[in-house]
Image 1 (cartoon, rainbow over the protein chains, first blue to last red):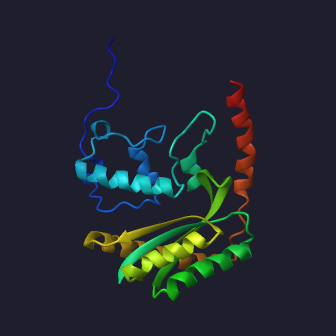
Image 2 (cartoon, chains in turn yellow, cyan):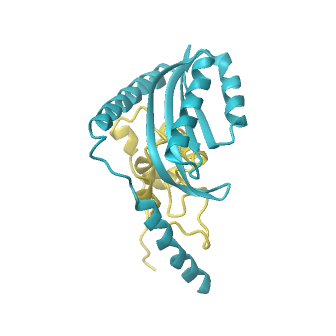
Length: 87
Length: 146
């Protein structure tokens, strides 16, 4: 029963490192806000602030359109370490 | 004049010379519409995150330029007519913060280009994508059998 909460409410990582602009081509940086299935992680789990969450969601959507990040991951189309491949 | 960035993905089926000539044609489209190209950054042949027109790979090329905003529709129309392009993405850098970011991106790309011209003789043809493609098929079959 004593199931630990997987995520803890945290401070905004982007605020801490004072990110002012995110580049959609820098796929490694997007990894933090993407789930295993390449969904955009909700704010309540990552602890991002509203401003940076808005920025990252726009950037991830751009990267998806540019085929840098997949839209979906299905059982048929399994991607083996796409971040390593893309770099 | 406003700052823009264009990412174009060229078909992988073309030969290296054909890719270069098509990139030249793309840059020609921008300059003929009154654009000033700041720098270009070729990210090279990459694996796509998903298939586009049944292609697994694509040649990524980024162009940083500035044009009058009214010219963008014409540039995009010409891109859409080009059958050698798999995908293109236009990004506007408008606010002060974005313009600052654009300048740093341009600087970075210029440095990278200067570095590449130096090391041009050393770099050989990268054959890694071919290996990746062969590795993938047994994995896909394995998941299906499960």
